[in-house]
Length: 502
Image 1 (cartoon, helix red, strand yellow):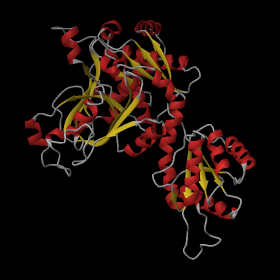
Image 2 (image 1 turned 90 degrees about the vertical axis):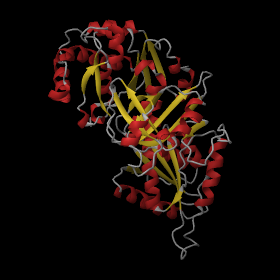
Image 3 (image 1 turned 30 degrees about the vertical axis):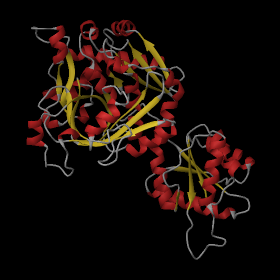
């Protein structure tokens, strides 16, 4: 797994607050215990020595955590807490803020040792709403030191995604391919999220690509590609210089066009004109950038690129973008799936997800012998009857089995943001097909497919994070104010639009 270079590094700070009619040492003692518990979990957090009782304290504490370089903040109610100063902390801090509260520690110490933070959190949330301040509040925000340390752990990936989106630019090349209106992308909603976008022509990309001809750095990338692919995966050594030239083109474009932003993702047009004019399919290059935390979404799927980046920040690892592509044949289900897994998947719970070859090599099953190949569908269209040439460049193989989260953040045609999240797994079942592909299983997928994906008019692309990250994604989408967050309902849990007579 390559080191991701395109996501923020979260540096946490913690500030304790104390209502002036409560004992301040209660908050300070409890804050210290949280820091010790979080450190034992392997985390790092800056402990501000300033405990906030009033607005002046709040300003001093903010100056302290800012000087320490913190970009995410934990506000800890060690006792009831002062409502105005504690919410001012979140209002004036330039980064995501989490609120947690102390549980009472012993039935033997409920006089001077009682903090009433359980009550204080209610008033805190009310004050946050009055001021229209966004904050991360865990599902149950009250706990002892060890419990609160684990809540802070859950905050980190959400904070990383919030910071990433705040400094993200999506760079596109070309319009959506004809008849791919499913990738319609009204960009107004991106600005609502704080994301910048730069839209370019395919011609701009081609001019830049040609300008990189004979670049002295190409040979180093060719060597790296050959090393990554190995002998079995490097079917077309002659193609590597073309693809290395393209990799340099994208990386240089990102660096030159970041502008005011720190992070970049791409959404590129990859057919039908691309392979003939550039001389290859871009899939393998896209996979390599994804492995470094720079997703490149196919078919100018802007919200696909956005979703991939969110998944990269949340998981801290490379993700992929796949077509929700085809059903699993019944004979394949009967022979390879039925009754063979801990969850008793129905045929309708399974499907195959595919793309031409943009999934990082580290995510492919080694037994399937992943390799650079040619795009069969494009070859039929663009090089019929000929030996593959410019339709080469896909990275193909079965995607490795394991837990996954299938999700997407999408703008509707009238610029309202909506999302879905579904947890499941990739089954250890050979695909028997081509491309970067896997056999997926999600509980009650058939109903989810009909009553979320179809009924809510989602496109055929979904982002895939490798692991179960539904809780963090849901928390992030809530923080972002996404009104519609759909998920796969369990059997017996009816969708609002589901026919009750089924």
